[in-house]
Image (cartoon, rainbow, N blue to C red; front, side, top):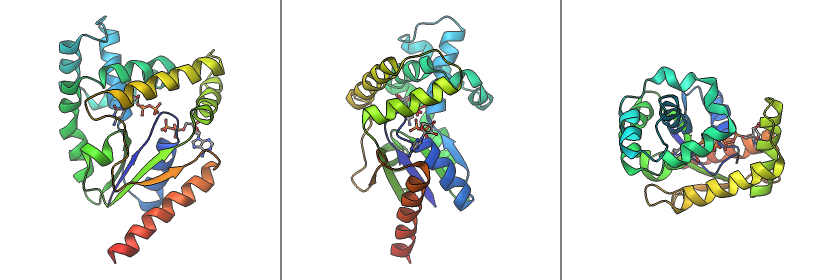
Length: 210
Ligand SMILES: Nc1ncnc2c1ncn2[C@@H]1O[C@H](COP(=O)(O)OP(=O)(O)O)[C@@H](O)[C@H]1O
Ligand SMILES: Nc1ccn([C@@H]2O[C@H](COP(=O)(O)OP(=O)(O)O)[C@@H](O)[C@H]2O)c(=O)n1
């Protein structure tokens, strides 16, 4: 079973993906880490983020061990990732790796922006997770502050709005719900309620498939 979870920044898709993976005994891939890691390589080697050729080389040569770099979680890396993620050849270089992960038995949970639309259009379960920008900013602010980053709520809200616009407006695999995705608005759900709703979606699909 392949479960595809997409949605904007801090909507809760990673949390849901991890919980569904644990519940169903499936491996999980946070695909945002791939784009964060490509941006990190550029920054480590003093390339500009809009150096398309360097970004494509970094994507083609990406070592899986780079995904464990704790620096990928920082605030500026989400922003940097969305810049390199808009380069079509970067996305193309990362596609096969993600599909290979999804094809492994007994299935997988992948979360990102284009899993249900581009990477795994045949996924049995597609969930598009949303929440208002203000609620997402509150969550991300709490998360970053908890990790000791000095940042204001207003800055995080600005980041989220800018990233939403860039991710939804780009021509290559823009952030969008697949036509057959189930929508899950988590604005007024806590984590446990959101997990229960997501498991409910998966179970509904399993019943439909008999
Ligand atoms: N339904 C929810 N209610 C409150 N906080 C949540 C909820 N879902 C996730 N969070 C918290 O919000 C932050 C962002 O969640 P995360 O799953 O990383 O989002 P995403 O992967 O969409 O960026 C995390 O600190 C997480 O614990
Ligand atoms: N499948 C994906 C995953 C991430 N991304 C890009 O990578 C950036 C960081 O993604 P992320 O999922 O790590 O970020 P958060 O949603 O956790 O803040 C996003 O803003 C997108 O631009 C993408 O284009 N496609």
